[in-house]
Length: 219
Image (cartoon, rainbow, N blue to C red; front, side, top):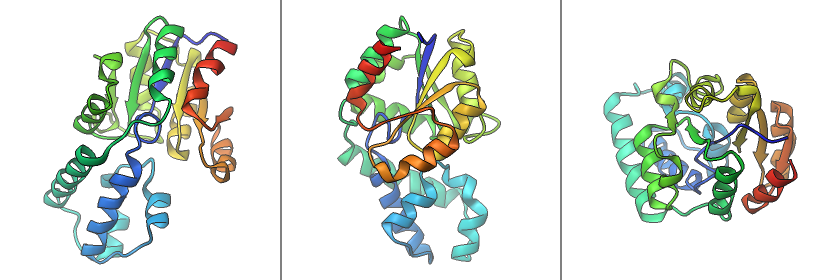
């Protein structure tokens, strides 16, 4: 199948940001009174916007999740990402292949805020591929697992969502792509996560971003 457009998630798909972001979040939540392991923090928050978990955070810390706290989190997160962010191995070749496969109809559709997405793509040298085609769940009525960000990206590219390929790495993101009516392939470097991604609706799993060019070529 030749897809009309390829829509990439950002965190964990194009950039190796999740351990960094979750490390900052875990530290700040511990400072507020919610102590958890790195594994539990990743498991709970990956694919989700921090602000959308307000009720749980407030219940576990006993404190209001204020806009000042969120602003401080974003500041500390951005500093950590600027210092240590790296591209996912093979993502540059994967994006280039998708760009060629769709005749330049690709987008980045993330649940993160726009500043973070643009900063990260710039830092790893991918921003030019997505010029004018970056979509943030923070700017939608609903973020993932709702399909809004993927529907907006498909509409912008004048592509039928059923003819789009979504590349995701989280259950929440896979659910969003499926809800949009797209085909979803899950980047799954850890085999133990495969069952959950399949259950969420991913039609194919692959373990290395460098595999995507061959998968696209095979149709």
